[in-house]
Length: 334
Image 1: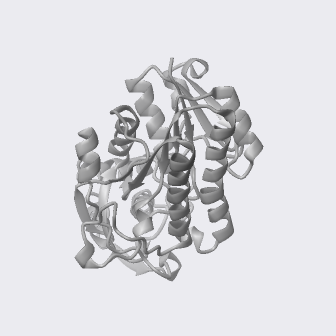
Image 2: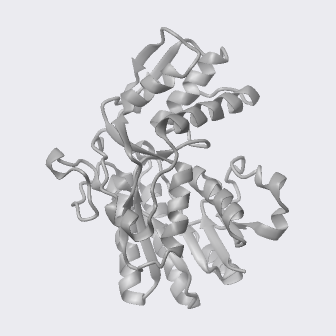
């Protein structure tokens, strides 16, 4: 039986990846998380299967090399999906050291531990489309060879992640593949991201938890949207479809729109009318990566992957997720 380690299994992407692997493979899944990580995104797994047979949690912290080393020593995975990160760009302006330590040095610790144990897993490292930052219109769509122009400490940290991964591939021959995933969303998306915050606020208004006012940040940023369930399918193909190690791939959806258009669509499918939109300066970044249009031909040619879930379905599922969640939990505005 193949074994896989997913760092960040309790997050949106990690939990959906676990769902996908459970349904499509017979792999043993080790989910790496901190002891204090919320587990609501993976609680449903215990209702589907015997967790002892297919899924085990591994408690490790990317800031703690010993925990990483001991976990890898125990599990000896055939595949590693390195998804764990401080992934909120806005928070990175206030948590620079934590962001750098988790994303840059955390990746360094993980890959160094692999070399010390002399194991040979296929490793997928998630970089981010944020590394491209502010892009000139003449450079669109963004290819893998576009220059970096980071617009946040988070983006800087992901450049570090990107370069460290390539270093370990070239210097030590680790079987590493790097992805720069553009905006991906859907059920379980954290409410600190724009479209999920909108969906949560709309659901809260529908349930009578807040006034008919939605707080927003920059509505003019252009995004290309993919569904998280398409994203995890892409990650599976990345490591199984005759992978070419050392390569970097842009991955993203086919639907592009502004953040404002996302809000407009969510309001259209909601049950509320005459909503007031309020700019909240706390939701604005000092610099914004406002043109996120990817060239994904390289990845599609390599794997044959194409997005399958339409934007409208993703938004409906995201709104329904918050409707269901808020029925059972108090609303906290963010």
